[in-house]
Image (cartoon, rainbow, N blue to C red; front, side, top):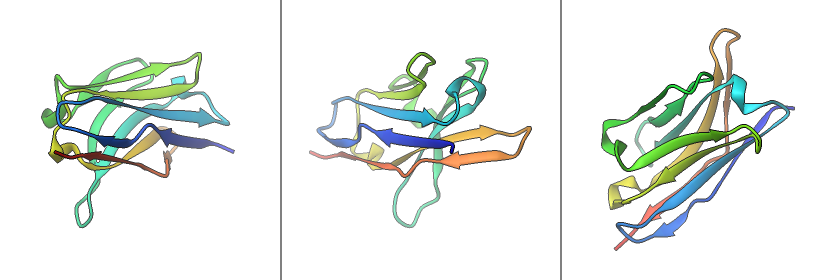
Length: 117
């Protein structure tokens, strides 16, 4: 069974850092386009960062220069390193895995990130 499980959320003050992890089971992350999305109540889920199976990355403008997405194939895990966090980064963060050729699309359960003063 294919699963993606997030961890690493929490409370942090502005300017702080967190690293989110998305661990895969039942598959290998290297074959997926992996993304991190975030969502607040009443708002649409929005892309934060993504990495393709050939390591191309893209970022939302609001996080460029502060967040970094990476993949560790040995640990079968994708990370989102978040630095210089701002209150507006507060959201539930979701891991997404896609293989568009096959129509596969998986979501993790989400992890809460709260940036507070």
